[in-house]
Amino acid sequence: MPELPEVETVRIGLQKLLVHKTVQTVDFDWPKSFPNSKQQVDAFLLGATIIQVRRRAKVLLIDLSTNYSLVVHLKMTGQMVFRGEQYFGAGHPNDSLIGDLPDKSTRVTITFTDASKLFFNDQRKFGWMRLLPTAEIPNIDFMKKVGPEPLEPEFTKEVFVERLQRRKNTSIKAALLDQTVLAGIGNIYADESLFIAGIHPKSIVSAVPKKSLFLLHTAIVDVLKLSIEKGGSTDRNYVNAEGKKGSYISFAKVFRKENQPCPNACGGIIEKLRVAGRGTHVCVHCQKLYEKE
DNA sequence: CACTTGACCTGTCCGC
DNA sequence: TGCGGACAGGTCAAGT
Image 1 (cartoon, rainbow, N blue to C red):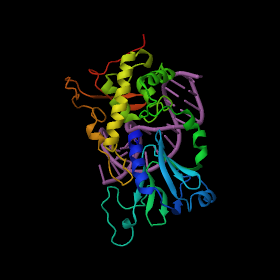
Image 2: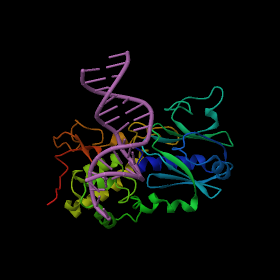
Image 3: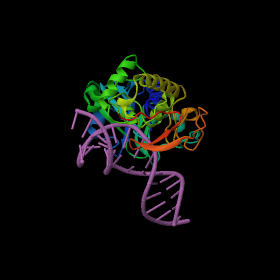
C-alpha cells in the first residue's frame, strides 16, 4: 500500500533521523528481503555513514559514504522504522503503535554506532532492500522505465496526456497504475483522483476527452500533495519512520467508502468493483464512463 | 508491442 | 470454535 505520499513521508522522516549515523552491525536472514552477501555487507555497509535519503517513484534510496546505496521498495506491507537508543535495554518506553522491535516481521536490522537501530519490517515479504553502487541505480530496469515524478515541474498536463497514449486501449485506472506512465500512483490515489476528476475507472483512455484528462492531472497533483501534508494513508500496515500512522485516509472521498453516500451529496452510493484486478471505489453518478466508440 | 493474468507471501475476515 | 477460501495490492514474468 505504500504509494508516493507514504514513501515520501518515510523519506522525510529518515532524512531527519539517519543522516550522519554510522552503521555498526547488520542482521538479516531472508534472502528475498535482502539478497546481498555477507561479503558485500561487510565491504560496503559496515562502517558506512549515511549521507542523504532520496526517493524516486515508490523507491527509497539511502546513500552511503561508500558510494553504495540501500535501495528499498516497501511493496505492500514494508515498513522502515527507526528507534533511538532509549527504546532498548531495561525500562525502555513502549509507546509505539507497533510494539517492540525486532518482531516476527523484521527482515533486516541495522544498528548504528550510537546504539540506535533501523528496522526493515515486512509481513508479506514482497518488499526488498538491496545494496547497490550509487552510480548504478539509474541503470536498473525499473529506473530506466519509470515515468515522470508527478510533483516535479516536468509533469505538465501535456506530458501526462502524451504518456497516456502508450496505454490508450486500456482502462484509465490500469493506465494510472502503470509506473511507466507516471511514477508513484497506486490503488488509493488512483481511485481518489478519478473520483475528483469525474471519470469512471473503467473508461478507455482513448475515449476520455482531453479536458477531463487535464482535470485528472490537477486531481492527481492535488491529492498527492494533500496526502503528504497528512503524512500519507494508513489503511492497514503503513507507518512512518517513527512507527506512527498517517491520517489521509480520513480525508479520502471514495477509498474504502463502499456502501456509503457519495461525498458530493448527489444521492448516490459508493460502489466497489474490480478494475485492473484491483478493488475499485466509484460513484457511478458522478464519474462518467467513456467507452470505446 | 499491447494487454491481462498469475505469482510472490502472510494475516485477517467471513461463512459454514 | 475451527477451517477453508477470499481478499488485501506493487511489480514482474508469463501468457494471449
